[in-house]
Length: 489
Image (cartoon, rainbow, N blue to C red; front, side, top):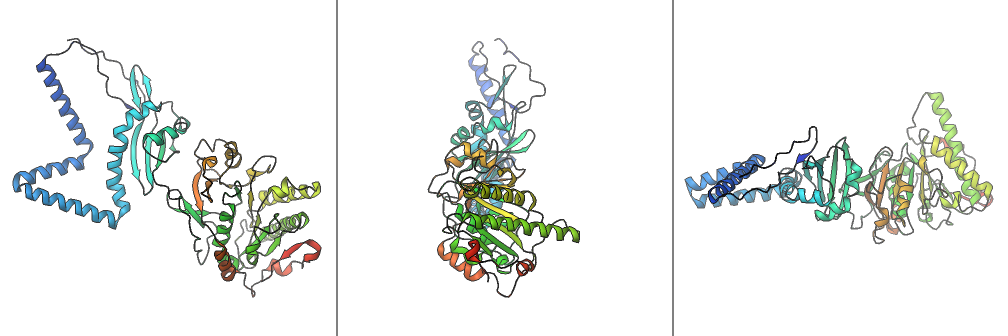
């Protein structure tokens, strides 16, 4: 019998090597074949036993109980073990998923099917005639999906895996697959099996003292609360008609409700649609411009003046960051349709003034406590040429795949931001990209109904007895002269 050909292993190759392929040689005799089969079976049993010590120990104990006490005691022990697992699962699902479900799914769903999946998805490497596979380092099962920590092969990059996410999702019976970089040489491959964003989310109850750095506005794909930073940040929301931009805006205002009531936050609203979109919440606004472009630009320029005056006061006081108070509230400039001022405005002078004011606010307003929240339907460069000044960007349903990168940045769609694939019957679902974070996060904003809006005005209208220093010093405005509606509470 000729010996199989031995191939040298690749020195320094990262990843696990596939089992040696069978070499063609002269057929052995019956005795040799039987001995070889037994040796292989024993080797596989030992390897499996060492890889799963808990299961191995359980089987040894069960066998010992059966031999010593009989089959009845063994059945009773198995019944008690099953009952204990069920109680554990009901009382503490998180630890059960971490210690039991993750191991079971890691073995029977992923590791058992890993080699053919890697081959068919083109994620293996052949070196010196040997096949090398990426290694599964860890499996974590959550309520809605699984996360696999995978060690890449030498020469692989996260982009290689991002190009295969659709294939991987279908291979492992998942609705969605996403790749997130862990550290050099390792990635998290996230499989979603149940979508927590499929159902409409009711309006969330705001905190008594809102955290302006983490305002709850909805739910993330992993089931955790979706929180937005507003203090020291600017927010851009892009989405096609009916994509749910209003859900994000009203959820954000609702989360700030107690702070608006206490006048620690002032909302200056701009609605180029004649007030149709934002007028239901006018009772929550300190300033509301909607009649014509001149009044809207005037509001933006006033916000710039407030920003500059406040920056000077902070400089004189030796402060580098603004802290919202009733005397110095956080000013939130809310623009419902940004393109109406930056692209569709027929008056060239007003258009230039609007762009100049917005760019000053976006580039200088964070530290003095003047934040911009803007919504737009068309995210093209000719519509909003300064979108990079928004550190936080949210893309809801978009019409074209190229628009995803326009909003979230280059390669955002490759990194998982499939905004053009969001169904029209899921308003409020989108992807959020934070400044400095590579992968977009899938989220859904809560739905704020008309009844919720009426309740918000009743609960969170600015208190009549509290007037900020800036509001007390501001000159009065005439609605007839400036077309600017002022809401004084």
